[in-house]
Length: 178
Image (cartoon, rainbow, N blue to C red; front, side, top):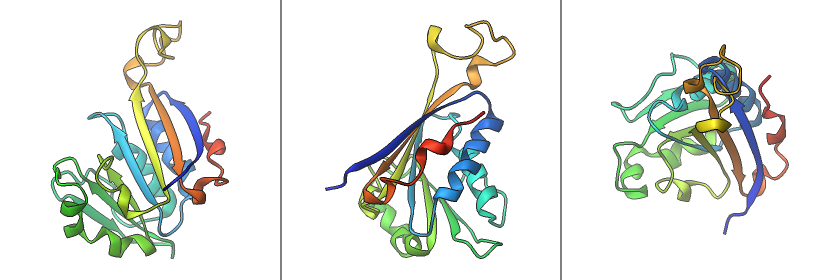
């Protein structure tokens, strides 16, 4: 049974900051890491992955893999490849995911799965779960509290939770965005 490691909560106020969060998260990742991204349509999952890819030094533009299901971005710097998966249209759980051979890619890559919650957890006992939610109502840091320069529609509350021993002391507390 997996244990929950460290958790970090970050308020992200723009797409640029979401990409920066990905850049800050990337140095904590290593080959074999599984990252699950959860959030509604337009929450910023691909934007975060774009920042990961940039910091990992991978080839190719990181775009949503919705229609191709998975894209592999090889490293240009000798680091791990980034495998970017969109499981939105895959309803069969791990059985359907097996066709993608993610278990083969995982040991030498960083595998990021959008919409993977409830579908790919069995791939790795240790994983990182990133939940992106929109800040709403009076508690939203933008617009409603006297900061009209911030667009409240862009504000996200991001919770990054490490599952398993690998994430116990991985430095998730260092993810704050300035």
